[in-house]
Image (cartoon, rainbow, N blue to C red; front, side):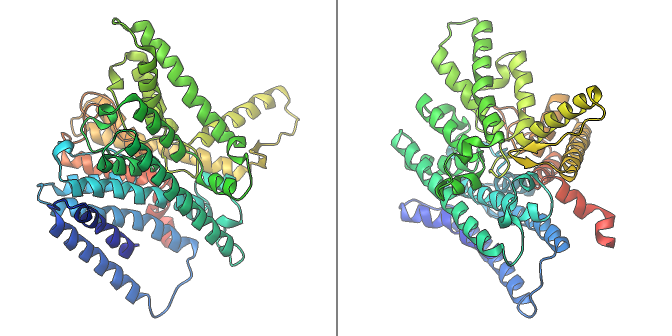
Length: 472
């Protein structure tokens, strides 16, 4: 992984050089790539003698530690650049990139060195495919995450399943690259410069949200906002279902329960919010433009992309509250998006209905089914544990941020946006019209850890940090 990361570190220099542009931080990228490549080479040589089977305990350590270390290594080009980026800002930016959160501690993006802008977008694209692979192959093996509900032989680490896993991996990579290319070309043909189209194409499909401007997507036309909405939705759908569609299983995407609820939310909430904005607007209201803006920003928050075209926190109290709760939702399991994921809310409704029916029919036997599969008690227990740990982490991070003298809205929304990997928070400081630059360094370190925990489904990190894990 380190060696592959070092290769990607050379891309900003190579791409700008091929375009005939100056590369102001070429030395920083060369040094960073050299450091990361050397670490990878040492790792390869140290394992040359005796390969070791990847048991669950090793996989937990490898999964958690690799994301933390790669976030740290990804921050090296920012720190070594000539832009005077501090260690806290560099790590925050690298973490936000590799976890596809989209929160930024950098300002002046319109005039920033293009190689750094490219690196931010490439980081999110790498993080997107890494997240898909982790959700489809690694976390089901570790019995963590929502993909256990959709597990097949391809998510079991056995000799029999390995050929199918390789086929699935190739299919996932093909679909991811295909949609990325389509996004870049579509943006370019719609009026973006090739540089902007390339960056936003990578960060749309990865639901990352990094932009090349402080205005985010607010500088582009309604047509581009609609295209970005479509690509964010694509990035938030289960990619393994796209692979199944390509292999002839037509219709599986829209038969999926989480996909149907996800799309229902995205088409219902923006319509209702647009009506609310029309009702409270004191100025002449353009229905089409405002619907496009509402749909785009709601999609950006629900898919945890983090783009913004307007300051939606200023749309009124109801919109403020709605966006706060939308930050919890997230996309579908097996996608590049973060959040609590749609399926957990659906399972909660199934449990609620079951409990209500038990009160009416105490002796009845009930079966839980989701997407045509039986839902075991183990899955339910895991979901409840995740929800409890999520809320506990939200409380702890909020208290830590508040102890740094941050106001309640900034502390709470900052903690929430880091755990759900949404990007912008709410309020005057870290809201859609601001960024995380004004926060103290301690807050940026705390939020960086929160982003990594959220991306790793929290339970993976908690397990590795528990004393029992190391005693066993």
